[in-house]
Length: 224
Image 1: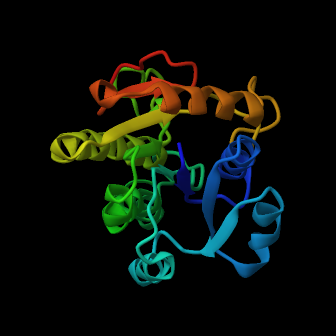
Image 2: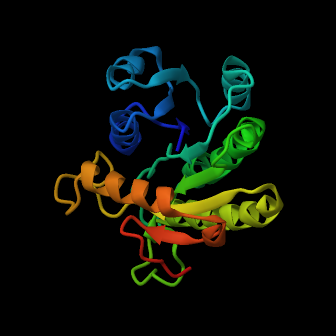
């Protein structure tokens, strides 16, 4: 894929994306929010930049630091689950925070780095979403902030796929599965290695005809 830019690459799925891509000989640039988080990312062979995707000035500073460097693939991985609250306990400020990070921030980052992606060859924009953002798949309710934010992310990507279709872009939303991360917990059936290997295969094999689609890490399509 050439050069891949990954947000939220200091741990979990983002770090595993960086590790596997670096092992494949790819160039990887990843973002972390704090200086103290650089070490582990740099240890796998990636270049680490400081960036808070929930802050416009921070994103623009990252764009400036990158300059006109070409990017082939953007992976918007940074995200949060938020506080686990029942309907009666719901804190709407927390809902807004989760929505900003999971839906607005990926739009901000995608737009900000478009010139760099246009300078690249692959022109792939990937949003890491969740099956919990599928309206069709919601059979249990709850998780308002997370479900709403991921459904919005999915819609954003569909609009992006149409707006960038004439410029050679492939825009996908990918569900990593239930993975053994801080968010997924240790009882999850998938390891980060398995999930990322699957998603990288989907990304690598995707073409413009797939743009706007919602895929599982295995390559299966997920209903909206």
